[in-house]
Length: 373
Ligand code: OSB
Ligand code: MG
Image (cartoon, rainbow, N blue to C red):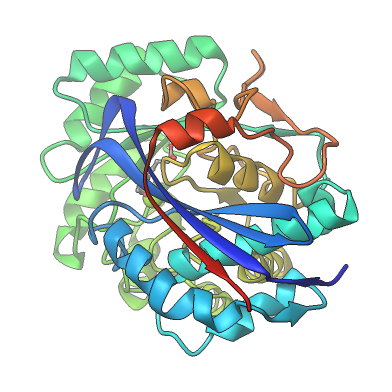
């Protein structure tokens, strides 16, 4: 169903995390997030810009995203008509990088199109391969191994199907050894967020003894060839995250055998159209994918759930319950996880969770409105 972008409203919200989240590039206590609301004929679609507060995961950060949206991205689409949300990305294709920022608007348009058609977002994107999606959790670097073990116990008891732990030099082999001693048979993986180089190859080979499902993005954020060399030396599968920003990157990585699994993040690849392309390429190559997370609010979380209903999302992803992140989410009801470690999808139109607009306004610190004349 076609639509015209008549209004774009940008909402900057700030929400403290229930527990700090630490990766190899830093610690986050509170999230600064931009929500993108696009409307047509009084109906609004919502998206989320999933970048971090600082340009350390990739080049994007909240303040930069705000500037880019107001100065370039919104003017490129405002007042334009589209037959389908799959066309929206073309309007910002001339801008280099900043895919999470462009993707926040793109995803809002998919939600708008689904709402105008009265169908769930998962249906619009061609998903629905499974009525519930398998869930894992991502656990950050902690202050002590005891604290990490405690957190893993909590999540395993809650039913989550796999545990991902963050690693960095100095918090890797010996910590994983202790986790494995305590949990010999859980599905376990490690995410390095680009903290190593090829000179660490002998060190990384020590991970092969722990029966990890995969090691995620051990090497540089923009490096595919070195990952191919590392994968050839490791038994443990490599999963690529940061360095897959386009379907073309996925194709190159698979051709070079730079990894055996790909983590798809909706924002990192610039929205649904590109995420579906990455998904399809991996499926053709027999490479399983899973849905990554960026500590999203309920809106980004709900988009991830829709994405993860595509057929090749066969591995548990990083999409988990709202309460792991927030004291209160901006959707009501929140995202809940079953004791089986799954999230059940519904039939409501769009991303499928009602917004708690009063709460959203109470955590909103900046607001900008653009209207087509
Ligand atoms: O690399 O997957 C990552 C969070 C922020 C930045 C990068 C990553 C992550 C996560 C958390 O692992 C996933 C989540 O629980 O949302
Ligand atoms: Mg990662």
